[in-house]
Image (tube, rainbow, N blue to C red; front, side, top):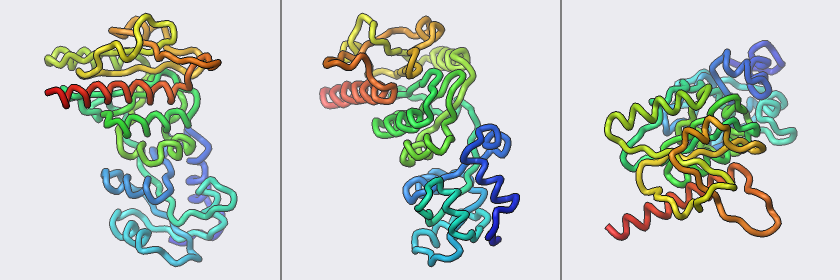
Length: 273
């Protein structure tokens, strides 16, 4: 296929950049960049289309991706491809149209070494992507986005994740109840899964809690913190001690600190055993 004008197909793909409802109806989103596309290929994501610059010679990398995915291949004029890339002056070499995965908690593997994260009602897409990146960096099993929240597949989230959104499962749920039912199901199978929330007024420092067992960490909304439902659902609450004139940490930064602390404790335990 070749597209040189903004026809109906182009407009449908462009809408994926700006319209959450259309992403949901089409069950697809846009991915660009060498690392994110490579990770999508490596982790078996389903590609609906791969779009390349009709006026540019393909690199070996791009030619290889086009030959491996089995997706529809589309040659597009650079001015239109630039619009799909979301940047005014930078024409991407490839833009991938990728299928949205199901929002199914079974996508997140729970083992005795489980470490996962919940983001309660996030309002900033970039924070979701950054949190997915941190979960990936500290070998977490997945990220759960709970409640009325920003879209993990918003382009700002996809970019902020630098590909980690394609590497670790990110699952959306409507409320804490779905997560708690999932937690209790694993406990019923004999896995002592602990739920640890974060709050600046908690009594315990995060470093004082035992995070070496299977642990689900919970971070609250950027402005209002954890909902009362999540506070009651957590087995323990912890604070991150900070100084200076800052009143609190950004939600994604707080997630990174808690994930690091869990990883630090686990590494120390491994050395002692």
